[in-house]
Length: 444
Image (cartoon, rainbow, N blue to C red; front, side, top):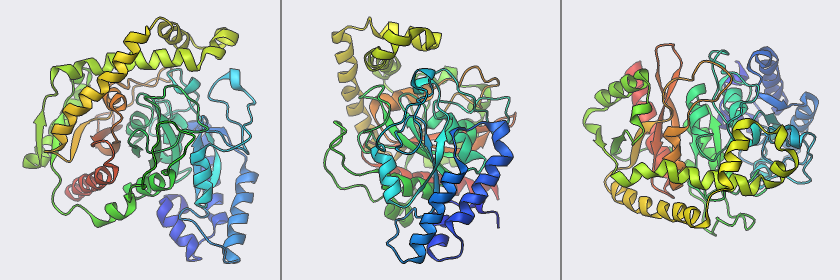
């Protein structure tokens, strides 16, 4: 058995039963990293001996009969914008080189409490924006893995770890998941704490996860959720029962609606053809719908918020080291410096108007089906691809999935994005599983 083929849930179960050890699993992951890292370049910080020592401690705790969490002994990769008390967090920029946080980000602490092994830190683009890091696409290293969670998506795609953390301010979970052919999950905005994570935009920043199957998305999502007073957008509430509802399965066939969105003209020919085939395959199980005209403003409103918040949150970096910033990021910060308070507040408030319109759509449908990206991962490593198909849903704070169900002519993966109503993450995951299984059955 190749242990790198195991999902996080399967590996945790085998460790709990004593069928494998955490040390076995971490050693297998390190061996895979040794085979692929020179080409893929997924890691920003990796200390193999430290990873092995964590595994030894996990195994010792298991032998001693200590209580075990749902991820006991399972290695997880962490995007290098999440603070880690035992590894550097450099945010993809030379301006933060050598930065050593004193405490874990809340989500990292929750993963550790669940028993996870922090395998290392994965490559992020510069300050989790557009300037690429060193990572290549595991399917074809001449193509981008997407961004900004480049290393996390790539590490999962080639079996270096069963799951990894990412974040999304525009398309930084859904797009790289699509390009690398893995499952990606961006929860509802405000369900996962951002305390201890690089702050770019309070209305937009959302934590996410990459994995090899739907069960792992639910497992890690559930572990990550839980109220944290350190995040001003969280409210005390019971965490969603993601795993239980996913395990129940859909009681009836979900109602799906294909939404091209106002940016459909930016989809590649391969993407259009693939979604046409998906629509034909689903037949009566999927309707189509054109979003009303006001949704055409979503991309511009998102841009207003994002650049203004970049100007605020990266003000120190701009003032003290602007020459070390990429031209793209520097231009975005300077654009944000010119945004007026009136325009910013209008952009924030307009999201509520669009969400009210979506609420009516979600009364009729369980999920929206739409592209996760314009098509396959573009060739070249000088850019990370266009996040345009994610922008509206990030702006609205809705939960989203990227499902690796389609393929282009290259062939490289084409992701199917599912979008659900805010707060109904469990049902969205269940719908994603239903769609994944239906496509898989047809392919057999």
